[in-house]
Amino acid sequence: MKRSPIIVVMGHVDHGKTTLLDYIRKTNLASREAGGITQSIGAYEIEHKELKMTFIDTPGHQAFSNMRRYGARVADIAILIVAADDGVEPQTKEAIGIINAEKMPFVVAINKIDKSNANIEKTKNELLQAGVLLEKYGGNISWQEISAKTGEGVPELLDLLSLTAEVEDLKYEPEEEAYGIILRSTKDDRRGITVGGVLKNGTLKTGQNIFTKTASGKIKQISDFLGGKTNEASPSSPVSIIGFEEMPQAGEEFWASFDTARMEEMKAKKIKEEKPSIETANDSLNLVLKSDETASLEALKTIILHTDFQAPVKIIQEGVGNITENDVKNAAAFNALVLGFKTKTDKSALNLAKTQKINIIESPIVYELEKEIKGYIQKAAPKEMRRIEILKTFGTPKGKEQIVGGAVILGPIKNQEQFEIWSDKRKIGEGKILNLQSQKKDLPQAETGVEVGLLVESRDPIKEKNILIFPS
Image (cartoon, rainbow, N blue to C red):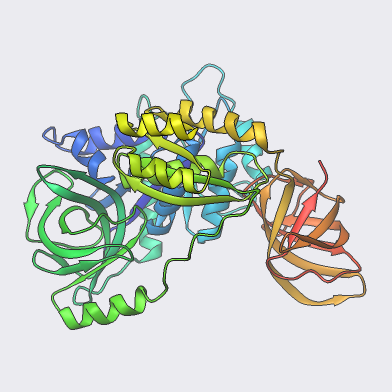
C-alpha cells in the first residue's frame, strides 16, 4: 500500500530549520495541536493538497548531529536549508555529506530571502561548489527560495516535496511485522517509559510485543502526534508508545508483532552480538556520560565527536538520570571524566568526586557544555589532522596511479596535496592527489563531510579503511 513521505530538515544552525518547521506546523495543523506533544514524540504530520507528510523535528545544533543522522536514516526525503545571508556553512557541508551517504533524495530551500543582506546568487554558487547541482544550473536538484519567517515560498516548497514523494512511489506491507525508528525516549514516575518514534512498515497495534536492540516490552498504549489515543497506527505515522520495560536508545530500530515466537526469533537474530568489554589505554580519554533522556544522551556523545583531540575516547558508562555516587566510583576506577547534560549531581556523588579528585562537567545548555568539554580536552590533546577515510578502491593500480573513493573526515582537502597513508594507527606509505572530484566534478578542494573520488600517485597500494593524513 502507498504511504506518505517522512521528511527531515537539515542544515547549519541558525539557518532557519526550526522556524520553517514551526511555520509548517502552525499553518497546517489544527489549533488544538500542542507543540509540547510533537516535541516529545520528535515528529508531526501535516496534510498538503490531500497528501500527508511527516516531518521529523530533530534539533539543529552541531551537538545533535547523531540525531540528525538518525533523522536521515528514517527519512525518505530531506530538505537542505541554506540561509541566503550566510550561504554554505560547515553544518551545511556536513548535512550534504550525510544526505549523499544515505543516497537520499532532497530539495534545497534557500531561506531568509526577506533579509536586506540576502545574496541568493552567491548562495547558489556556493552550493554548486559544494557539489549540489541545482536545476537550471547544470543539475537536477530542485530548489525553492523561501522566507520561513513570512511563509513566502513555503507552499511551493511543499509542492516540490509532494512531487518528489510521487517520484519515489513509497510503499509498505500492512501485514508484516511493524517496523520503525525510535526518535525520543523519556521516563517519569507517573507514566513510566514513553517512547516517540516513526513507523516505516507494517501496522502497529496495542498488545503487540515490541523490541529494539537494547530494550523490549509489550505495547500498552499508542498515541498519535496530537496526543490522541489509538489502537493502531500505520506508516508513516509519528507515534508515542508506552510499554517498554527498559529505555530504548534514540535512533534504534524497533519491531512489533503479536507473534511471540516470531519476535523471539527476530530478537535472537538482531541481538546476537554481545556488548564489547571495556578496554582502556593509558593515553585514552575515559568518560562517564549522564543525561535526562536518551535523545540528550546521544547529543552528548556527538559533542565529544565534534571536539578536536587525538587521544582515543572510551565511554566506560552511559545512562539516564542524576549523576550518582556509583557513577563517580566507576569514573575513579578508570580515571574518567564525568559529563552531565540537563541533569543534576547527587550530594553524595559531589563529596566522593571531591575526595577522589574526579572532574564533573555539567550544564543544561548545550552551547556551554560543548565549550567546557572542548576546553578540558584541548588542554591535554593536540588538534586532529586533516584526513580522508577510504571507503572503496576501483580497479587495480596502474603503476603508481590508483583510483579510490572516500569521505573527508576533517577538511579542507586540496587538489595536488601530499598525504600519508595510515592503517591501524601506523604509517604505511605516502602519496599525492593527482585529481580530486565529487559528483563527477573536478574540485579545487573538498570540505568536511563531502564524499570524494581521488586519482592518487603512490608507491604503496591504498586499501579500504585506510586513512589519508594531510599535513597542517
